[in-house]
Length: 242
Image (cartoon, rainbow, N blue to C red; front, side, top):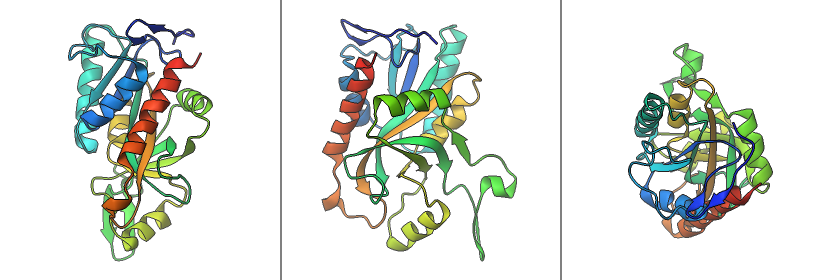
Protein backbone atom coordinates (compact mmCIF):
# COMPACT_ATOMS: atom_id res chain seq x y z
CA UNK A 1 0.00 0.00 0.00
CA UNK A 2 1.35 3.42 -0.92
CA UNK A 3 0.94 6.32 1.44
CA UNK A 4 0.23 8.99 -1.16
CA UNK A 5 -2.89 9.70 -3.18
CA UNK A 6 -3.89 12.38 -5.57
CA UNK A 7 -6.51 13.62 -7.98
CA UNK A 8 -5.66 13.79 -11.64
CA UNK A 9 -7.43 15.33 -14.60
CA UNK A 10 -10.07 12.60 -14.63
CA UNK A 11 -10.69 12.17 -10.94
CA UNK A 12 -8.96 10.24 -8.21
CA UNK A 13 -5.68 8.44 -8.91
CA UNK A 14 -5.17 7.11 -5.38
CA UNK A 15 -7.88 6.24 -2.88
CA UNK A 16 -7.17 6.10 0.86
CA UNK A 17 -3.50 5.50 0.14
CA UNK A 18 -4.05 2.22 -1.71
CA UNK A 19 -2.35 1.80 -5.07
CA UNK A 20 -5.35 0.06 -6.65
CA UNK A 21 -8.94 -0.20 -5.39
CA UNK A 22 -11.95 -2.12 -6.72
CA UNK A 23 -15.37 -0.73 -5.77
CA UNK A 24 -18.39 -3.01 -6.20
CA UNK A 25 -22.01 -1.86 -6.33
CA UNK A 26 -25.12 -3.85 -7.16
CA UNK A 27 -26.69 -1.67 -9.85
CA UNK A 28 -25.66 1.03 -12.31
CA UNK A 29 -27.35 3.93 -10.50
CA UNK A 30 -25.18 3.20 -7.45
CA UNK A 31 -22.10 2.90 -9.66
CA UNK A 32 -22.94 6.28 -11.24
CA UNK A 33 -23.11 7.89 -7.79
CA UNK A 34 -19.68 6.52 -6.87
CA UNK A 35 -18.15 7.60 -10.18
CA UNK A 36 -19.59 11.09 -9.76
CA UNK A 37 -18.15 11.36 -6.27
CA UNK A 38 -14.72 10.22 -7.43
CA UNK A 39 -14.80 12.48 -10.48
CA UNK A 40 -14.22 9.55 -12.82
CA UNK A 41 -15.93 10.79 -15.97
CA UNK A 42 -14.00 8.56 -18.36
CA UNK A 43 -14.59 5.13 -16.80
CA UNK A 44 -14.45 2.35 -19.41
CA UNK A 45 -15.37 -1.32 -19.58
CA UNK A 46 -11.69 -2.31 -19.77
CA UNK A 47 -10.60 -0.38 -16.65
CA UNK A 48 -9.51 -3.61 -14.95
CA UNK A 49 -7.37 -4.74 -17.88
CA UNK A 50 -5.80 -1.30 -18.44
CA UNK A 51 -4.67 -0.98 -14.84
CA UNK A 52 -6.74 1.99 -13.73
CA UNK A 53 -6.02 2.79 -10.05
CA UNK A 54 -9.71 2.95 -9.07
CA UNK A 55 -12.23 0.68 -10.78
CA UNK A 56 -15.98 0.82 -10.13
CA UNK A 57 -18.22 -2.03 -11.32
CA UNK A 58 -21.89 -2.98 -10.90
CA UNK A 59 -21.97 -6.69 -10.12
CA UNK A 60 -25.72 -7.34 -9.97
CA UNK A 61 -28.07 -7.85 -7.06
CA UNK A 62 -27.48 -10.51 -4.41
CA UNK A 63 -24.50 -12.25 -2.82
CA UNK A 64 -24.01 -14.87 -5.55
CA UNK A 65 -23.71 -12.38 -8.40
CA UNK A 66 -21.57 -10.06 -6.26
CA UNK A 67 -19.18 -12.87 -5.34
CA UNK A 68 -18.92 -14.17 -8.90
CA UNK A 69 -18.16 -10.79 -10.46
CA UNK A 70 -15.74 -9.78 -7.70
CA UNK A 71 -13.85 -13.07 -8.11
CA UNK A 72 -13.77 -12.63 -11.89
CA UNK A 73 -12.34 -9.11 -11.65
CA UNK A 74 -9.76 -10.06 -9.03
CA UNK A 75 -8.70 -13.03 -11.16
CA UNK A 76 -8.26 -10.87 -14.26
CA UNK A 77 -6.23 -8.32 -12.31
CA UNK A 78 -4.03 -11.03 -10.82
CA UNK A 79 -3.47 -12.73 -14.16
CA UNK A 80 -2.27 -9.40 -15.57
CA UNK A 81 -0.11 -8.79 -12.47
CA UNK A 82 -2.10 -5.63 -11.72
CA UNK A 83 -3.38 -6.65 -8.32
CA UNK A 84 -6.02 -4.80 -6.36
CA UNK A 85 -5.01 -3.80 -2.83
CA UNK A 86 -8.53 -3.21 -1.50
CA UNK A 87 -12.15 -3.99 -2.38
CA UNK A 88 -15.02 -1.82 -1.15
CA UNK A 89 -18.66 -2.90 -1.43
CA UNK A 90 -21.07 0.01 -1.43
CA UNK A 91 -24.61 1.05 -2.31
CA UNK A 92 -27.93 1.79 -0.72
CA UNK A 93 -29.35 -0.34 2.08
CA UNK A 94 -32.11 -0.74 4.59
CA UNK A 95 -31.21 0.66 7.96
CA UNK A 96 -32.06 -0.03 11.57
CA UNK A 97 -33.20 3.53 12.00
CA UNK A 98 -32.84 3.66 15.76
CA UNK A 99 -29.11 3.47 14.98
CA UNK A 100 -28.72 5.05 11.53
CA UNK A 101 -31.02 7.74 10.13
CA UNK A 102 -32.47 7.72 6.62
CA UNK A 103 -29.95 9.23 4.25
CA UNK A 104 -27.16 8.48 6.71
CA UNK A 105 -24.08 6.32 6.27
CA UNK A 106 -23.11 3.00 7.84
CA UNK A 107 -19.68 1.40 7.70
CA UNK A 108 -19.42 -2.34 8.29
CA UNK A 109 -17.29 -3.70 11.09
CA UNK A 110 -18.25 -7.09 9.68
CA UNK A 111 -20.48 -8.43 6.90
CA UNK A 112 -22.84 -11.19 8.00
CA UNK A 113 -24.76 -13.71 5.89
CA UNK A 114 -27.88 -13.26 7.97
CA UNK A 115 -30.15 -15.78 6.23
CA UNK A 116 -27.58 -18.44 5.29
CA UNK A 117 -28.24 -21.44 7.48
CA UNK A 118 -31.17 -23.59 8.57
CA UNK A 119 -34.50 -22.92 10.25
CA UNK A 120 -35.87 -25.31 12.83
CA UNK A 121 -38.47 -25.58 15.55
CA UNK A 122 -36.04 -23.97 17.99
CA UNK A 123 -35.12 -21.08 15.70
CA UNK A 124 -32.58 -20.15 13.04
CA UNK A 125 -29.10 -21.71 12.99
CA UNK A 126 -26.42 -19.85 11.00
CA UNK A 127 -23.96 -21.63 8.76
CA UNK A 128 -21.04 -21.43 11.20
CA UNK A 129 -23.13 -22.91 13.98
CA UNK A 130 -23.93 -25.83 11.68
CA UNK A 131 -20.23 -26.36 11.05
CA UNK A 132 -20.39 -25.67 7.31
CA UNK A 133 -18.18 -22.59 7.09
CA UNK A 134 -18.17 -18.93 8.10
CA UNK A 135 -21.28 -16.80 8.08
CA UNK A 136 -19.46 -13.52 8.75
CA UNK A 137 -16.34 -11.75 7.53
CA UNK A 138 -14.61 -8.99 9.46
CA UNK A 139 -13.74 -5.76 7.69
CA UNK A 140 -10.03 -5.20 7.24
CA UNK A 141 -8.98 -3.21 10.34
CA UNK A 142 -6.77 -0.73 8.47
CA UNK A 143 -9.38 -0.02 5.80
CA UNK A 144 -12.10 0.21 8.45
CA UNK A 145 -10.03 2.74 10.42
CA UNK A 146 -9.48 4.84 7.29
CA UNK A 147 -13.17 4.80 6.37
CA UNK A 148 -14.22 5.76 9.90
CA UNK A 149 -11.65 8.55 10.00
CA UNK A 150 -12.63 10.04 6.64
CA UNK A 151 -16.38 9.49 7.16
CA UNK A 152 -16.75 10.32 10.87
CA UNK A 153 -20.54 10.52 10.73
CA UNK A 154 -20.86 6.97 9.41
CA UNK A 155 -22.26 4.62 12.06
CA UNK A 156 -20.06 1.54 12.54
CA UNK A 157 -21.52 -1.91 13.11
CA UNK A 158 -22.40 -5.21 11.47
CA UNK A 159 -24.05 -5.00 8.05
CA UNK A 160 -26.30 -7.93 7.24
CA UNK A 161 -26.33 -9.59 3.82
CA UNK A 162 -29.60 -11.25 2.81
CA UNK A 163 -31.03 -12.85 -0.30
CA UNK A 164 -34.57 -11.83 0.67
CA UNK A 165 -34.95 -8.42 2.28
CA UNK A 166 -36.82 -8.12 5.56
CA UNK A 167 -40.36 -6.97 4.79
CA UNK A 168 -42.54 -7.42 7.88
CA UNK A 169 -42.49 -6.32 11.49
CA UNK A 170 -42.28 -9.95 12.62
CA UNK A 171 -39.26 -10.62 10.40
CA UNK A 172 -37.56 -7.46 11.64
CA UNK A 173 -38.09 -8.51 15.25
CA UNK A 174 -36.54 -11.92 14.54
CA UNK A 175 -33.55 -10.38 12.72
CA UNK A 176 -32.91 -7.88 15.52
CA UNK A 177 -33.08 -10.66 18.08
CA UNK A 178 -30.32 -12.53 16.24
CA UNK A 179 -28.30 -9.41 15.43
CA UNK A 180 -29.06 -6.75 18.04
CA UNK A 181 -26.14 -4.51 17.04
CA UNK A 182 -26.66 -4.58 13.25
CA UNK A 183 -26.81 -1.17 11.59
CA UNK A 184 -27.94 -2.05 8.05
CA UNK A 185 -29.24 -4.77 5.76
CA UNK A 186 -28.17 -5.16 2.13
CA UNK A 187 -27.67 -7.96 -0.39
CA UNK A 188 -24.04 -8.08 -1.56
CA UNK A 189 -21.46 -7.47 1.17
CA UNK A 190 -20.90 -11.04 2.35
CA UNK A 191 -20.56 -12.21 -1.25
CA UNK A 192 -17.96 -9.55 -2.05
CA UNK A 193 -16.12 -10.33 1.19
CA UNK A 194 -16.13 -14.08 0.48
CA UNK A 195 -14.55 -13.54 -2.93
CA UNK A 196 -12.02 -11.04 -1.60
CA UNK A 197 -10.88 -13.44 1.14
CA UNK A 198 -9.63 -15.80 -1.58
CA UNK A 199 -6.85 -13.26 -2.25
CA UNK A 200 -4.70 -12.98 0.90
CA UNK A 201 -3.61 -9.44 1.61
CA UNK A 202 -6.49 -7.75 -0.22
CA UNK A 203 -8.43 -5.54 2.19
CA UNK A 204 -12.24 -5.67 2.33
CA UNK A 205 -14.65 -2.98 3.50
CA UNK A 206 -18.33 -2.09 3.12
CA UNK A 207 -20.01 1.33 3.16
CA UNK A 208 -23.77 1.77 2.93
CA UNK A 209 -26.17 4.69 2.61
CA UNK A 210 -29.57 4.19 4.20
CA UNK A 211 -32.52 4.53 1.82
CA UNK A 212 -35.30 2.91 3.86
CA UNK A 213 -36.01 1.40 7.26
CA UNK A 214 -35.62 -2.34 7.71
CA UNK A 215 -39.09 -3.81 8.21
CA UNK A 216 -42.51 -3.35 6.61
CA UNK A 217 -42.22 -2.15 3.02
CA UNK A 218 -43.46 1.43 2.65
CA UNK A 219 -42.22 2.79 -0.66
CA UNK A 220 -43.54 6.25 0.17
CA UNK A 221 -41.02 6.44 3.01
CA UNK A 222 -38.01 5.44 0.92
CA UNK A 223 -35.29 8.07 0.44
CA UNK A 224 -33.40 6.62 -2.52
CA UNK A 225 -32.29 9.98 -4.06
CA UNK A 226 -30.98 11.12 -0.67
CA UNK A 227 -29.13 7.84 -0.16
CA UNK A 228 -27.54 8.04 -3.61
CA UNK A 229 -26.43 11.59 -2.86
CA UNK A 230 -24.93 10.36 0.41
CA UNK A 231 -22.90 7.82 -1.56
CA UNK A 232 -21.73 10.48 -4.02
CA UNK A 233 -20.76 12.81 -1.19
CA UNK A 234 -18.97 10.04 0.72
CA UNK A 235 -16.77 9.09 -2.23
CA UNK A 236 -16.11 12.72 -3.05
CA UNK A 237 -14.72 13.14 0.47
CA UNK A 238 -12.76 9.88 0.29
CA UNK A 239 -11.19 11.06 -2.98
CA UNK A 240 -10.21 14.40 -1.44
CA UNK A 241 -8.88 12.96 1.81
CA UNK A 242 -5.14 13.30 2.24
